[in-house]
Image (tube, rainbow, N blue to C red; front, top):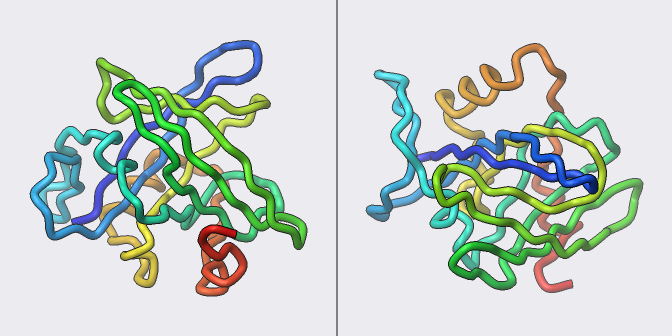
Length: 170
């Protein structure tokens, strides 16, 4: 199954903006996540906290971010009842950058997580867990992503070389 979730971001002035991160995962477990069905095409509620609560790396497969990012991955550092601390590693302009970020889970909307970061950038990401990154996201997940971003340009930033460029633990 592949799954999707909605995240929010907060700029420095404290204004909250919603950001979709179509988070996808291939799983044989019985979590109560959202899943995109391919024939009926409706969403079942998802709990983003369950998705990010993993030792597995989560890659950005596609993004609307117009920066010069070639690869991006997040790794869980700590998870609490209402928040998460994770490391975002990216390969930008030929160099690796690591940033520690904090996310806050939305108590009312289980598909949302607010990520605290600098700037006003609102972006939409299609993300996959490391175990499923070697195949393209399923058609229903890609359709959901494109439906959300509408006509905004989107860039594929994941390639197999990202595994080497952003080795775990470096």
